[in-house]
Image 1 (cartoon, one colour):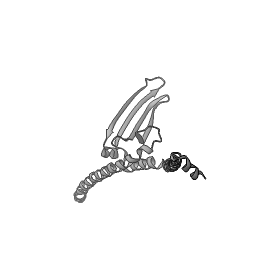
Image 2 (cartoon, helix red, strand yellow; image 1 turned 45 degrees about the horizontal axis):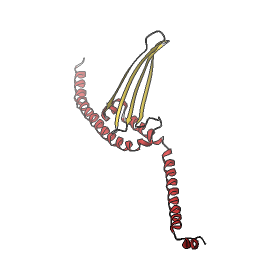
Image 3 (cartoon, rainbow, N blue to C red; image 1 turned 180 degrees about the vertical axis):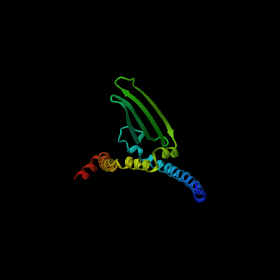
Image 4 (cartoon, one colour; image 1 turned 135 degrees about the vertical axis):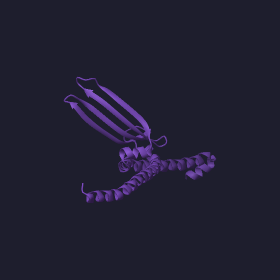
Length: 185
């Protein structure tokens, strides 16, 4: 290596090494800020969870469900499932990781692991943007909430009308016989 190359290499390293430290600090700060934001977002999303059950499983909503199939032979392989689920008891995130081996000749088996995962670990595993996009899908897929509100408002109006009508009938029924005739005429 020529001496000028060595000088150039040292100059590059002198400028690059501090930059790598800055990048690592910025990465950590970004993850911490995203984790803090996700915690606040999950609390808000938790409030709408009772109305977002497209999968029919109350108390939970699958946000991310990644499946990869790896063939090992023509008639065998592995299926790897990596799922992030939001549960409404907290709220809390649960990561499920399942590996299934299947085949016509080989023995079939599966490994299943589910555990709570922190917001920071969820971001490291799935990415902040992907989790936010999944939450958008969870919330926006429920167009029936406005219709449910309108139906409830109609029920309230009917019940109010019935209460008023029954109150008027009660007044008529409780009046003396002569007074009731005057009201009916």
